[in-house]
Length: 293
Length: 192
Ligand code: SF4
Ligand code: SF4
Image (tube, rainbow over all chains, first blue to last red):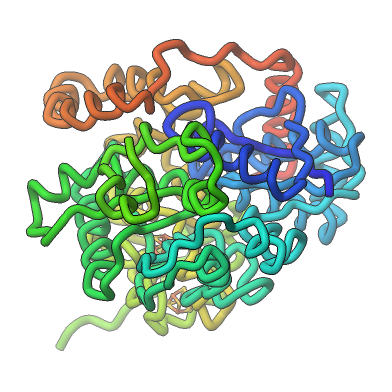
């Protein structure tokens, strides 16, 4: 297995623990990752709101063009990056007029895309390419008894509804949580919005959504939340202090990246857990599994 | 008796001419987007109501509504709309059209512009740079709010979640800008 890897801007900043744990986990699972050379921002949920869909999708397509010579599928961990790259790619493949327009714009930068690649979401790759059996076989420290709320987030399951899961109540990530020996809780808010970039412009939205999501996880008896989305992780982890100021939270809720929990269950060195970056301490919840600061 | 609604098409035609504008014509006012929306409680008008403002030609109300700016791109409406309207893409058009026309009062409009400047400036987005640009645009009242968030910022720094140094600009920045410029020219040529 080899993949072109699109880390996205968040992995250079707030989502550093995602990058560290993902690279370590990918190594164990023999997923050869090759970072796309000189990749640019995917545009997030923002570029299209400034310059319009088509120019923003051309911006995303620059990354596809840079990855194409390697011919590997592109694996994308961040949900917004996945949305932008995957939707652009699909439109490029389906819509002749759009394809011609994108090609012409790319030419202005000396680039070319032929549309041969697939853009893949990280959890979907873990399940469909790596496989649950191989993940289970890599577990050295089963997380028996740990109750985990799998927070998939809003965009991942809805970019292509029903393509790999239910767009509103996805269960695919729960299969990975089970493979690690832990117990996924029901958690019906698993695909509701975390408030996204309102965290800066209108933090009340973020703290309100965060409160509802964490309360739902607590009600179902979760001890930790895991997510594959950098935005979700930041809004639930970094903003939890603010959530507590405005709402009554019964207890603190550690929020890990899915790959951090995998690194722990694979019994990789603590550097691969990358837990020092987590703001809400996960050490109490994870103490029974030998996880110490 | 309330006055019957009169459809006025002039303003609607302007919006229908946007990239995803034609989809709006299919709206049957069922209200599914209203009940699905993640941020409906924060909106002056729900997406459905916004489309009604459009049909009745209420231009000022339309652009002063915060609806498009509240959209968090959660995709729920797009998944559920029975007429298959990609509402979230429509919201993109409405945001960029509003910016073009100078309706940029909402803080989100500043945030969007700051984010875009950050992309154009180095090809990647650095959170520190983004915040600096945003607060610079918003001025003092927002900076004060920013201070209230300083605990959060401190925690982020303590846990090494905000790099001190911005990333280097991408090597192909010039080419990237040329690509965007060309795309914008082509958009204009298409009359959008
Ligand atoms: S769900 Fe679709 S058809 Fe129904 S009101 Fe909203 S936009 Fe219109
Ligand atoms: S994508 Fe936007 S408009 Fe649609 S449900 Fe989500 S927040 Fe509401």
